[in-house]
Amino acid sequence: MKPWVLVSPSSRGIGLELARRLLRTTDVPIVATARKDLDQTREHVLSGLDGVQEDRLQVLKVDMLDEQTMADAASHLKTSFPSKESYLHLSLILPGILHPEKSPTQINYDHALQTLQVNTLGPLMMLKHFSPFLPRKSTTLESPPGLPSQAVWATMSARVGSITDNNLGGWYSYRASKAAVNQITKTFDNHLKTSAGEKALAISLHPGTVKTGLSKDFWGNVKEEKLFSAEFSAEKLMEVVCSRGVGARGRIWDWKGEEIPP
Image 1 (cartoon, rainbow, N blue to C red):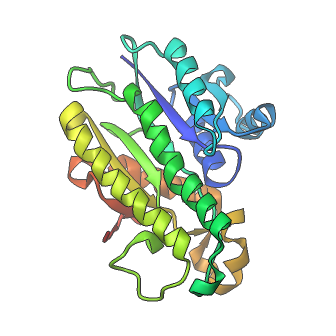
Image 2 (cartoon, rainbow, N blue to C red):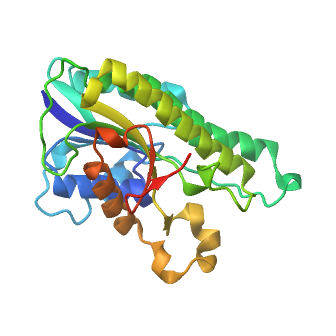
């Protein structure tokens, strides 16, 4: 059985750097996604990657606000990766938008709805359409270099999604969207225990504060040593993904490999 990897979205920030890193450090096919400008995304992912087989990379249209794009991409991949020959070894689901609210009076319905649609419903619908590619108990797993020993479905969360760790308040819609992601991760991991046993697991990830568009307005409030480049974040997140075994399943892990309470 031939493994492959999904990184969604991959057009910029952490997703872009994860796709680039996986092309450099593994030898498996990589499926990257973007909601527009697919050729430009492909160019950015491959830029400067000397010696990488470019045909290992597919870039498909996926919009977290449009379930049909997910269904279409999944249908295409059934041809590229037939179930009797291939399986999804690593899925990195990474969407994120932030409309910060400091007080309840600042909550905007449309912004809150969009936050939940992108951060929560997007990953949930990705589960619906792409989880069937994951291995089952009967699947024979490969041990590809640069990837975890078992299949992993990892979804981007955030420390502020922790209810236990919420001592400051604020960011109502963003906190709620990421807390929901953690519940989805736990629920889906329970499903994987039945369908895949120890051959697949689900986790949530916290990347730290990264220099991306999402956090740009808050860079000035973060100590320089705790404000990470997207490339550094991708490196640390892959270290976490590759070092978590079945004992880590269903839980939330930060970029240092430390657990965050739900």
